Image (cartoon, rainbow, N blue to C red):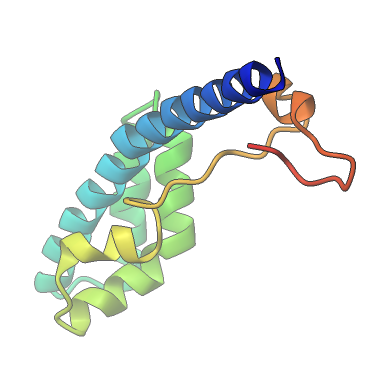
Length: 127
């Protein structure tokens, strides 16, 4: 019986994590890579950081469904993105390096049913 319960818990944890990872990969990763393409173009046109910010803010405003995530990527990573391009590092690698692609994490939600369900006595999450 104990083995069945453990198998069930593992299946729920894996399914929940896979769904979240797939969602993060498809949106955040793609968005980061697209933003990097724009940054590469703007840097090659010798635009200032302020000009790049303005253009990316306008871009993010035009994609309402993913606008907040777009704004978050720009505000969190833009100076690093610009420096990455200036240093002639490969643009597709940047998003994986900052862990937007390739290493997604589960979001921390205080009211998430699965997170609350699988908290161990020491306060660590089972999943």
